[in-house]
Image (cartoon, rainbow, N blue to C red; front, side, top):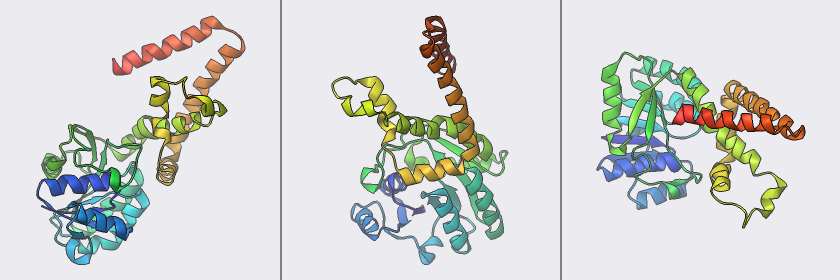
Length: 276
């Protein structure tokens, strides 16, 4: 295949490395010219993704922020082959699918929303790797859920990345779930580390602290945009969490050991229920 990639951060760079390693030709668009040059020296990219090379692409992956991905597609849709498959790799789906599905219909190419459920607290091409997606889930948001031929086409196109399994949902369902499973943990971790006690944690912290604070180390601009674009779902999750915290706070304030024990037991049972 000839693969075009917009953005060479952790996700885009890892896609580039995976496809190049499998012997495919990779073109990339990246605003940081030095990063683009480095990716070429690393053998992950073979040239620039621009008007002439866009037309050659069998697969195009949009791996920058949602608004930037949709805007790029709006500007370049006319150059894309009608035989091409275009996928975004953004963390939210409603807005980008709303803008990109009509473009695909107008210009004749195929667009599928996508979200690779893999990553790291580190960002940038230097942290990318060809095996980032090995065994990872991939969420797909197609326009037509009954098009099994399209789903097979997507799986075949992404075979060099070695995803573990694929799931299919609507853009709305994706954004509701991702608010809870991805965006909320980043906000909670980020808020938790702001305690003044954090300055003195060394020597007193182990696995619990490390697990809870890992994703506090984040790309602030990216996560702010993702959360803002998923505002209503995030507000629901935050309101739910704040109400739960109030119950723990009240039990401690009133020295109510029985209630606090019950709250902790409820949380343990819920964990067993959803993950056991």
